Length: 150
Image (tube, one colour):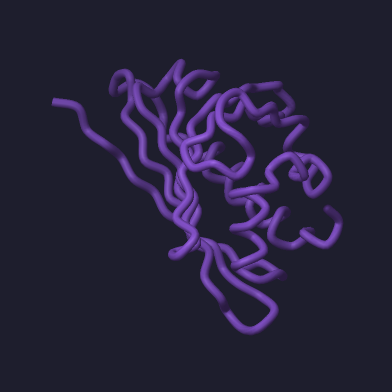
């Protein structure tokens, strides 16, 4: 039987949880201006503000170009964003992949983001994806800290 693995990490950001959620939920086209970890993002289906839109993310992981094509689901009330892999490099080693970002206020001008990875390995020899957690947490932190640059 397949086993779903789950890892979590919490990061602090220098902007509000609302602004963090807004850029991912309706203004993701601005993300390459906020972080150098993302080289480009393309809308594949839906629109930038629609729930269940499909986006293609181009990024560099440890100096290697990768693509993540996934469905984006947004729960604005809970400031939660869910990215589910449909295609891309990540699915070479994992049958399923889901990343959740949940933003919460820390004070009036800052927040925190809980990063959750859920995945199923294609086999038990596949390593735990620490580099993806580090990348995603670093990406979320850069976005959360640099929103004023967008």
